[in-house]
Image 1: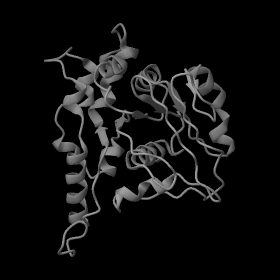
Image 2: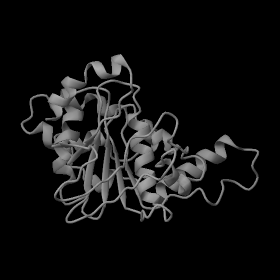
Image 3: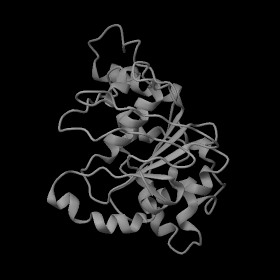
Length: 260
């Protein structure tokens, strides 16, 4: 396991440039012209160069921090959408991105306007891997660009009933797939507590299922439980959002030891 810093690996190279200054990063809400969201990766005085050199399989990045409110979900969503869109000015071509939500709150689904009550096979069923009922594959749980576009357009029109023309035509998602979570996932740690290999459930589900993606980004809950451990076991890189304040930095040593 390697930390996602300003370094390169033998199999992939992700160069993020230097850190941003306060307020320098431009975040765009997904509900407004998603195909402009690549601008969220930008520095105050120059673009942030981001290159991915691929060999076999996707780059898998886990976004973790056991402290809540540090921006894990915001970082994961904006990074995934920016990579999916690309930016010609910055020399970033669009990538096929799979965004995985391991947080039972399911905030990423809400971000895209997805009604969690209408989801098909759930992440909980994927983790159980046939322990109850028939096995569920990763492909059965994933929402594609068409599904996400429809959900976002429906959510936009619901929030803006006065707009007679409906959602903007530019409100369209491409190259981005979502593996959503819901509250049922909260019970998976109890269900798998005595199961051998429980820490590798996500990695096994991803095998032979994510080869056509360029990047996989995993959002995690604010805990160091089984779900976060599964993300670490499946990832090649770890991205740790952290606030520049005492309480946010206090437990970093524990987190770093867990990652190592």
